[in-house]
Image (cartoon, rainbow, N blue to C red; front, side):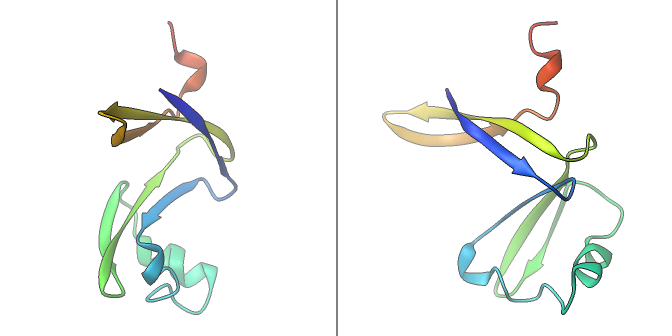
Length: 88
């Protein structure tokens, strides 16, 4: 089920518990990106939790988000980084 679009200005999607959003990110954007390393996706410690970061590999833009629903609850999400290829 289509639930909307996510805007990307960094070429990255970052998922974490918002309670830890400001913990462990470093003092600057450059330190945050350096900490990501070169692998994508990455799951790393983030404050007292973990964070998932995924490169879009297609840069900035708006990417459609779909939810896998079960009994009215979100079971999972899917972000389509190649929306122009849908239906090909």
